[in-house]
Amino acid sequence: MYIIKVKGVAKIPDYVQLRDDKFTLLAYFRVDRPEKSLDKAGLGDKTDYIMNIVKELPFGQILKLDL
Image 1: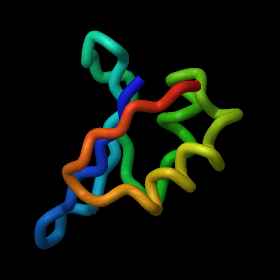
Image 2: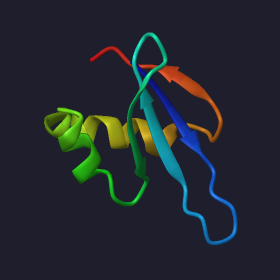
Image 3: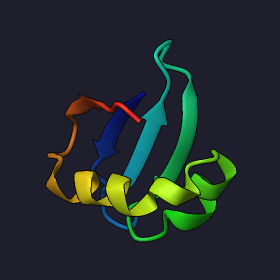
Image 4: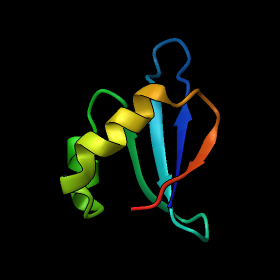
């Protein structure tokens, strides 16, 4: 699984994308509201772990996650 942090512009907030190994979009959510999207993707129990990574991840960088 891959995680990408996307910088928002003007009124558009920052977003996070979670993608599988084939780079198919699994979840797309605002940095300040991850719960609903992560629950839908079946990752609700890993919300704290994912959000700690998001806080440290620079914008535009792709990081491989091993969940």
